[in-house]
Each structure stands twice: as structure tokens, then as C-alpha cells.
Length: 241
Ligand SMILES: [Zn+2]
Image (cartoon, rainbow, N blue to C red; front, top):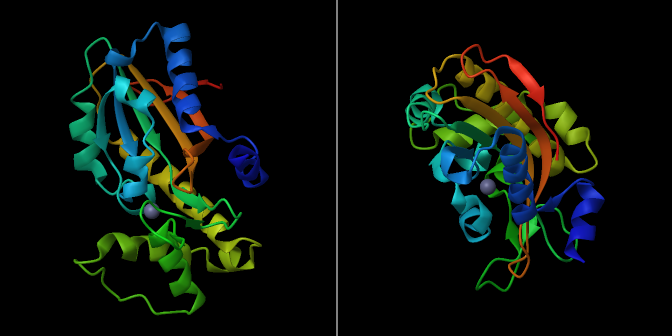
């Protein structure tokens, strides 16, 4: 079973539909929030596999407002988050979800998936794999960020900052994904601190998305689920499902 294979790498993963149902159950049971009172912002990779594998359950909420870019890093920055923050329903909730992704083929190859209409596997996340290749080969980073490849440059820079840790890992791409998640944690927190929100509630969720071959759904392992004070941004509650 694909889930068993996924859990060899991500022991707490569930399929993405279940992940969202559980999230919505918590928001309904604890805060009486219906999906149409929740505005979702998501920071996920631009990769088309994320559109193909997007769980139907996620479409009940308002949005999504896209914060992401390559490998789900919140590239829209302050202006993007501020725009989202001003769209939250008055009596509703802002839900910020961010997650890098990694492929896992049915053959058990981490960082690869079989895509629709293709015979051979390809890289996932391709941008993370490329950044990893650059730090492996010690390709020098250009001194200034290229305006035509800013996102890839940023990911490569993030991995360079943790080069030894990533290359020493048994599964360097898996470790690179953790590095990108940690950098996203920091950036999301920074952006939230500098943004004023409409609405009543603010929730933050992070995960690792595991994409698999075309005949299977995607899976997610929860890493963070918190309610923040929408004004002070203090953590009020650690949530679980
Ligand atoms: Zn990607």
C-alpha cells in the first residue's frame, strides 16, 4: 500500500483529503467555524502535480490565496500576506498553510514521481533537487540575485547555508526539504508579525507534502497546528489531530 511506503519516510503522514477533513473538524468542533468562514492562504510549490493532487476537501474553504512559489517558500512576501489578511471574513478565520513537497515513487524512490502521460519518473521537488545539485557541485552563487531566476536562487542560498548538514544526511533531498520547511517557518512568522489581520481567528499549519505516482493521492505529515492571537500574534493554543 502506498501509505505504508510513505510512512517509512514520514511516519505520521495521512492522505491529503484526510488531512484537510481533520483540520476542518478541529476548527468546527472547537471554534464552530464552517468552511465558508475560513479564508485559506496556502504556500505550496507551483508544480502542476500540486494542482492535480489538490484534495477536493480543500475547496470548501474560501480561497486559496497563493503565498507560494518554488517548493512552497512564501515568496509573495509582506505585500502578499497583507492582501490576504485584508480579505478575511469579519467573523471568520485566516488559515495559513505552508508546506514544501517531496516525491516518492511507487518503487520507493524518494524525490521522484511518475507524472501523467510520461513513461519515466521525474524529479519532485525539481527546484529543491536542482538547488541540491548546485550545493553538491559547489556552483558559486551569483553575487546578486538574478531577476529572471529569483526563486531558484533563494532556494539554493537557503541550502548553501546548511550545506554540510544536507550533504551529510542519508537522504540529502529529504534533509533539504526540512531545511526549506525551517526557512519557511521563519519567513512565515516574520511576515505574520508584520501584518495586521481582519477577522477573528488566526491559525497556522505546516506540513511536508509527499507526492506520489499519478495513480495515488498526495499525503501530508503535520508539523505545526497553532492558533495565534490575531492581534498580538502570540501562540494561544497548540492543536492536534
Ligand atoms: Zn516543487
